[in-house]
Every structure is written in C-alpha cells, then in structure tokens.
Image (cartoon, rainbow, N blue to C red):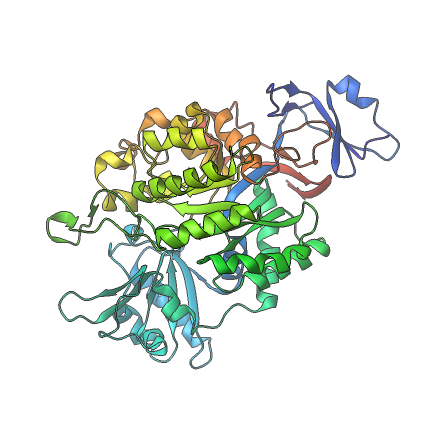
Length: 550
C-alpha cells in the first residue's frame, strides 16, 4: 500500500465539508489514499515513492472551469488570427493583420479571426465590410467578436452567403444594415451568423484534435484539471466527441472533459445516444445538453426587461431594443422535458433578466413533473442579470449557476455602454448567490475571457474593471467574495455543476487525485496580487501533468 506520490510539509486546503486544513497528501495510482499530518502520511512512503516537499506552499483541489469552449477555441488558437485587446488596439491594426494573412493565403481561402471588442478599440465602433474589403477583395473574411455572439465579415463572405440589402432578418438573429442605405454592414448577430457559417469551411478532424490537445496542455499550466465544454461548433458535435474520445484514449487529453451537446430542437437530442460509447471513464464524458435562450449584452441581444443603451443612437438609447429569445419558448419546453426524461443534464445560456426568468419558469414546470431536483440536473449558464427573486427561485429549484466572474474585469467596458448604470451593480451577483446557498461554478467561457482562473478569483474578490475606477465603482462591491469562497466556485461547488461531486472538487481519501500546488499562496498574498498568482505543479489523476521548471 505504498504511495506513488506524497505531498508533504504544506498548507493543504481540502475544501471538504469541514473545510479541513492538513499538511500532507498521499496518492496511489489515480486516487488520494490519505490526507493528514506529515508524520502520519510519511509511513506510506516506499522505496519508489516520489516525495514532494511543499516547503509550506498552498495546495488546493484541481480547478474546474465549468463553462469553456476548448473544442472551438483550440483550433482558433492554433490556426486563426488572434484579435483580443492584448494583440490589437484599433480597427487599423486588425485590417493590417487581415492583410498580412491574405498575402500568405491562397486566392479565395477563407480567413478567420477571433477576439475583437469594439469597446477596447480606438475607433470605438464595430468593424464593417468597408474596413475589410480593400485588403481582402477575393478572400472571404469572418472575424468573430470576443462574445462569440456576432461576427464582422467582408463583402466576399456576404456574397458567398447571398446576403444583400433585400435579405430578410432571420428568426433569432440580426443582419445589421446601414440606417441610410439599407446595405448590410457585415455585422451578423446570433443566428444570422449561420447564414455565412454554413458556407465557410469547417475545421478538419485533425485540426479539432490538435486544437483540443494544445489547449488542454495550456490549461493545466494555470491549474485547470477539469472542464465543461459548452460546445458551440454548430454541426460538429459528432466530430468533436470523436476528437475528445481519441485524445483521451491516447492519453493526450490532459484535463477531464465533460462535453455538452448543443441542440436547437427536441429531435436533435436523439443523436447523443449514438455517441455515448465514445466516453472514456472520467476523462471524457457526455450526458448534458446546451441550449441558447438569448444572446449577449455586448451585442445588445440578451433578452432583458429594459431597453439597451447605445452611444451611437440618438439620445444614447437603443429605442425598443430589449434583446430577444433565440428559440421559441414552446420548443424550449419540449427540449427540456425530453432531455430530463432521458436523464440528460440541461444547461441553458441565459444572460438577460427576462431570459433567466423564462428559463426558471420552464425548469419549475419540469421539476414539478419529475419530482424534486437533487442532482444539479438544471443549470443556468452566465446568469449575468439574475434578480433577487430569480436567485431565490434557483435555490428552491436546486438550479446550478455557471458564471464567469472574470467578465467583470474584461467585459465591463462594453457592458457599461450597453446597459443602465444601475444594472452594473447587480451583474454577476456572486455573494447573493453564495449567501442564498445556490451552487455556483465558475469559469472563463474562453475565448470570451482569458482562461487562467486567477483572473476569475481576483475579479470575484475585487469587482474591478479593465476601464478603471469610473466603471469599477459601479460594479457593486457588496457582491465581492473572499478568496476562499471564490476558490470554492472553482473546486467543491464547480464539481457539482459537472455532476462529479463525489469524485473531484475536494482533497479527500478516495477521491481522484487532481491537485494544484501553488507557487504563490492566494489565500495570504495581498488580494491585488492574486491575478498574478502562479502554479508550481498540477496533478491530474495522480500524474504530474505540469511542473514549473523555474
């Protein structure tokens, strides 16, 4: 019964029910076999045991990103233009990046990019076809916004899709048109994106595999050991499941992955069963569905009770625009009912307060038909504008929230342009959710925000904005968490969102050996330094998958 690895002489925060603190952990194969004082654990050392002297460093359970898009972001990371604020600061720079990619591409090859945010560009406006056309007359260009809910395309891409000034607005989507000429500007929102997407080449199977493999290697460097992939590669769920399965079987998938199956109607749920045999133990799992109820605040398509602001509109208000649902409530109810009858977890994207209330109405009906919800069968993804009343309903129904506290920092500049100042203070109401007893998992929604959990932990504790104090002061400091509670959303609480509460999320005997050794003690360093915290060692299933060479 010798241990394979012993971590000793540290500050081990177990996040178990008693919130125990111990000095040492013993691991055998993929399980934790003992926790306790270093003298006790030392008796499990054998001749081949690797003993890691922690020298007082902090150890936590492996971190869980409860909503991320590894399968879609991975290929973009490898093969597309990166256009986030750290790479470009203006439309001029974006156009130059597109120009360089066109020059190195074949004639008519599609150019893809991702990550732009108009609120962080010097021009402070959307990219349009007229910006892109001069440098890409023949190559269709699709540049995905950081929110993932709208794109900017050039005339070649519009032409490939047959979109003109006479094209009708699709249900659940928006073709943005010039208010004077009626010509499409190249900005497509929500389901309008698919008009172009279905004509652009999909990632190949090899690109999917390489993207997932690459990103999983990057995730463990920042302490992430488990993910819930809210797959949004439209029509590529089968290929994505196959890619995950193959990587898991080849032991090239460094994290545990739970993939959601995106559906738009109840019939699509039947497709999941065929792919359930692709699961690989706890390393790759299926069993949940993803549904979109509304859009985004940045795109002013989230379904809200109040009108959006828009600095480009007369009076600064987008009159009559309160967003919209991207699915009919009738079809949504069919999907939820069928999914639960088949035993699948239901995860719904809902950002606006009206969208959240509509989702809870449907969940309430489903729970009343199927008995009390005790297994986290229902989640609300994002839940940015949940009201106090909605939070109470979530607790009563047993609904999990999968939030992204890092949005407060990275996206609040755009949020402040889109919603009334008073709404900023109740965005992502973390403390209210925790105090009410709602299960809250945290994550990044990458590529929407950087995936390093230290950003989310720090943002949950400070509620600061990238834009500075002018917006930071509006973000409701009464909703700040402690570092410990913020870590809970990435560990013990997050595990419940992944339906793995008995296997991960805490450091206890019999649980899977997923742990993080921190180079910096997040619980004792000044909170301002948390966002710069570094990981020293990451262990997944008893295997050291990352070790800082420094």
